[in-house]
Image (tube, rainbow, N blue to C red; front, side, top):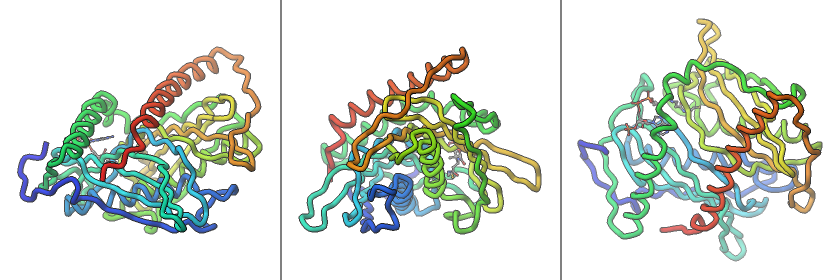
Length: 335
Ligand SMILES: CC(C)(COP(=O)(O)OP(=O)(O)OC[C@H]1O[C@@H](n2cnc3c(N)ncnc32)[C@H](O)[C@@H]1OP(=O)(O)O)[C@@H](O)C(=O)NCCC(=O)NCCS
């Protein structure tokens, strides 16, 4: 928990709301908002909430599972509401609610709830203390803060190997060599947020696009992003470095596919490389009516394929139980 509180702010007073009108240029081939853009806009709003509280630049350190439970259509508004629930020493727990708003009635439908952790950093991109604190005053704020602390405690084990994982450069193994893509791009100034560090929202946009290409290649038809598993960012990517993104098909369900994407930041001039993140996307093949359509079954024959599928099944079980829990409680927007 933050020690030196020079400012105290109520959770409710940390809210940042962003509204975007969804245009055809934001949509996928079936006329709904592109999942990568939802991720980018979501991370923009959560980053703003954290920076406004900290009064310092912040980097996205991690994101819990994100499920897209309702689409946002062209012509609707996409409403992003973020607030800071808890301040650690250098990190902040932020929740973002994303809703589709019908502009003619004002009626809103929940698209997703995302929990992210943002870390205040100095010019060398290393963590620095946050001097502000958030106070939970109402019962609702107290509940949100307790949940944020519980998430932080549950995550401790998951992130304990974060510094070691920076060195893990092995590419993800696909179920079948036909369904793997390695794509490179330079980190341009336009990708950066500050101090020459690539903005996580931009990276997630690129990853979503790659997941979609693998899904499309396997399903031979349109896919939408249904979920992104909890994702940790182990090292920043700097402008001028190359971003190596390897996307591999790692599971095939009835209509859904899991795509594992590993990102390596390469300083080509020095011949150095850092594992930035590994993220698991679930994409679903859909028909013109927006409903899921079956994909060709994938026959797992080899022993190593069985092992891959077993690992993916475990991730799928975690995902499905978290999704069920979110559907039960997530529709609640406290403010
Ligand atoms: C975030 C980062 C600065 C943390 O570095 P670190 O060496 O783990 O630093 P520390 O051990 O001091 O941890 C700093 C805080 O981050 C938290 N943290 C680190 N990794 C985290 C993760 N994946 N999820 C949530 N919190 C995390 C720690 O719990 C700690 O919180 P506290 O200070 O409130 O107690 C580092 O991992 C990093 O640079 N990541 C890349 C961030 C980035 O560039 N994102 C965009 C990628 S395109």
